Amino acid sequence: MEEVVIAGVGMHEFGRFDDKDYRDLGFVAAKRALEDANMSLNEVQAAFSANVYEISAAGHNVLEKLGVPGIPIINVENACASGASAVRLAYQAIKNKEYDVALVVGFEKSPRGFLPGAGYDRWQEWTGLGANPLYFASSIHEHMVEYGTTREQLAYIASKSHKNAVHNPYAMFRKELSIDEVLNARMVSDPLTLYMLCAPNDGAAAVVICNKKVAKSFTEKPISIAASVLETRRRGDMFVPAVSAPANPPYPTVAERAAQSAYEMASLGPEDIDVAEIQDVDAGSEIIYSERLGFCPIGEGGARAEAGETSIGGRIPLNVNGGILSRGEPVGASSLGQIAEITWQLRGEAGVNQVEGAKVALSHSEGAGGNSCVTILTR
Image 1 (cartoon, one colour):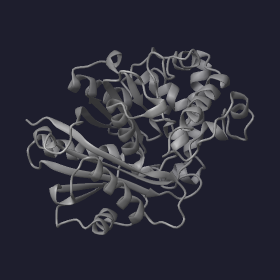
Image 2 (image 1 turned 90 degrees about the vertical axis):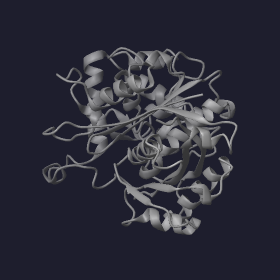
Image 3 (image 1 turned 90 degrees about the horizontal axis):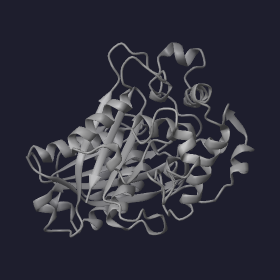
Image 4 (image 1 turned 60 degrees about the horizontal axis):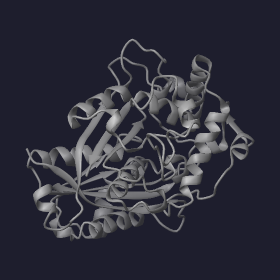
């Protein structure tokens, strides 16, 4: 089977753009990705489009604006994991020699406030249990009780992310925040204050994926996809966000299964990862997922973050460009934005936030309904 690489990436800035619709956002990201790959649209043989809240077949409208030349277009919706799920489809198609070049684009004009329709059953919605911050807060509260994780550790992670985002031109929030500012911000869902939560917003990101032999004709900096994995919840499980699964479940969580599958596919382990973008829709999620992905033992995520292990220069830098906490989350584009960020890291193009000598990078996204994607890239 073919070796699959990323030949180009592109993003539209994440934020609020009332003067643009989703077509404009997706168009910019896709155009930038093609330019980054030194390709024209005529080289693309198939397109995969990720979004959650737009109209049916929205990808067709984005690519129509781009001038797509009558190629297959597949629309993908897998909540926050939509973009990485679309990457997996493109990866599989190229790996199996169906296409040589595919374009993946994700975009969103997210509604303001708590996101609706996040995979909950009607009884959860009717009883007021259908708001994500509630489960994020419950998950990290359980972690605090079980392992002694502190509010100060949560605030440290939020402060770290906002400090990193100062130098990220694609982030919505680019203002440094102190630990005290985070702790003293308005409480949203105890123990999570306003700055410990991400904001749904607008944005787009795109990736050009292709056969390595073809890529060499266009770019001198292809990044190899060593693993692209999607795992989903087990049949009969009640859905709540995966972070709120029991601390010691009788079987691995969906994130643990996705990570294990990805490590096996790439013939690597968590100790081999130099830098990672992981799902940090809240500060507690970064702690919990850093453990579930194998970067530290269960229960030690908060303490290790506070000790600097997940900062730039630390043992395993996480979300070094501000993460979702600072970029915000245009749902269909979010995980593609993560993949773009780690691609720039492996190319050595991350500027002030560059992790020196990064050769192996991981992206992790978790979506409503119980979807977990892990992508591992190497150079």
